[in-house]
Image 1 (cartoon, rainbow, N blue to C red):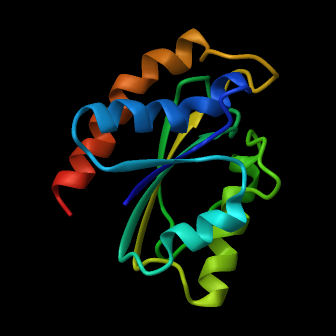
Image 2: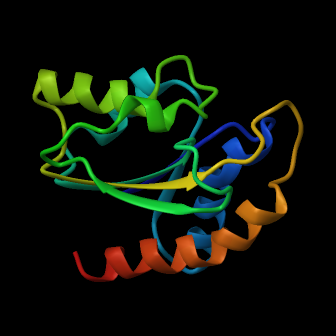
Image 3: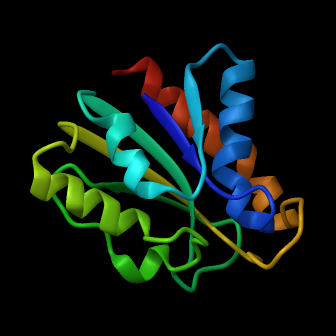
Length: 144
């Protein structure tokens, strides 16, 4: 299961949604999910593997790709502060882990955001990173 998370009206926060659009065009099953991360837990409950794509903010250059394995290790909350969601992805993962609903394998692809202010369209750096992101996610779906 591939889930792209984002808000289409917050510039780079839409990167997960754009990744879903491109993955779907390639025939890869991917779902878009908005800001309700409590609903995200329900979406992946029962899945054995999930790949999550979201905007992040670690202080790296915009467009930097991050790949994290959340299967056994907590996600760093400070990296997911770029999100405009009510609760962060790291909190949703840890709540799911505590509830026993976290899939066995959880990969998180984060794209360093440059701008999450109100507006549409990705910044140039994030737009350039999108092709590489889609290739990396697609490679993970073919090796599952």
